[in-house]
Amino acid sequence: MKKKERDEYNKTYGLYKFKRPLPSEIESAMGLVGESILFKKLISADYERFYDPIKMPEEGDWLMTHKEYGQTYNEYIQKGCLQVDKDRNIIYIVRLFNSNDDDLIKDEFFQYIIGLLEAFFSGMKIALIDVENNYINDNDNNDNDNENENENENNENKENNENNENNNNENNNNNENNNNENNNNDKNNENNNNENNNDENNENNENKQQFTGKMPINADLILEKLKEDVPENAFCLFGLIDTDLYTETLLPNGKRLIKATYGKRSIQDRVSIFSFARFDPFFNFNVKEKSLSKEQRFKIYLILLKRICSAITREICYMFGMKNCIFLSCCMNGTSGAEFDSKQIELCPICLRKLITNISAKGYDIKNYRVKNPMVVYDRFVKMRDALENFSGLYENEVNWFNARIDFLKTLI
Image (cartoon, one colour):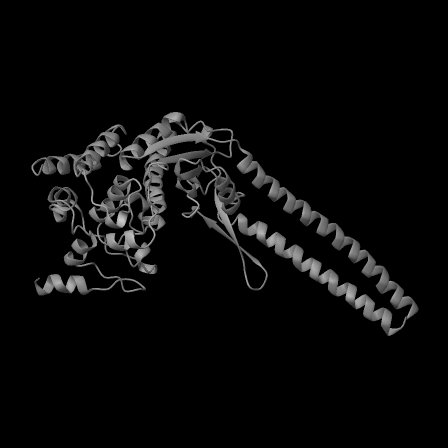
């Protein structure tokens, strides 16, 4: 390695001094020792030509402010990947819509997504299901309960204020003894506490509207409900919702921290909830879809579709136990909002190795498993190419990449 090239690898970036991984580290991370020659070739042959290096972070990028250790293949199989088995091999996609107007999110929209997922997770079954809106209605009821509780507290505070005022007048007029004054002070303190609690509730409601002025839904509550509905044959249950989400954390001082979130998952329980509300270009504006022109709506349709496809593949990979990738340009790279539209749709060889082996093992001990049919790698490339071609030009560059990769792999078979 020349000095100039070596200096590039020694450069550090961001708060946690991220370094570009060396070629030797990338090859070691694939963990191909013991696999067949053909499998090794189909996964990794000439990877430097086909897979871009990981983009070095710039201001605002994920790696500038987040510590990432990466995950090699051996770390993946040793430290708790969620393994597919023959009895749990279906990925369920659950549509959870808050609004009655789903004119933009039609069945055709999800046919594209399902087609991509069937190719991306080749060897798994994909099922799209709808559920009753009780997931969302129950959240609305909880918000209403909180509002009613706040109203009751307000009424109680008014009553306390009236009592305190009467007591104060009586004390002033009659100059009663210190015991009465102490009792009155106790009531005043109690009233102040009630006022503080009411202020806190108002503050929480304001925090829930922190970005758009629209009331989001509690991700934790929906996640708990999804856990109750996981089918026996499900590898995972993935909820997709068009409404913004938030999580709630109790702080040591007793206050609640309300934080907006894209979603939440429980790998152990095989469930995840994800919101695509913030993928809408008009998310921060009070723009109704019906007020937009047909051309504007179609552009939103394409932006939403591509963003959802990128997010949903990555989120389901998390359910497989995969972590953010730091080795090559990959759909599992950590991503900030600014980077999202530049993300690629495909896995790098290291992450592809994890996925292919997990699905192929079908319940066998993955630590000792060797892929018996290496051609599943080639077949998956073909399926991905075909699925992306169905998007009517949306993934033109990616289709060209898959064609080039497929043509190259044909020479190795």
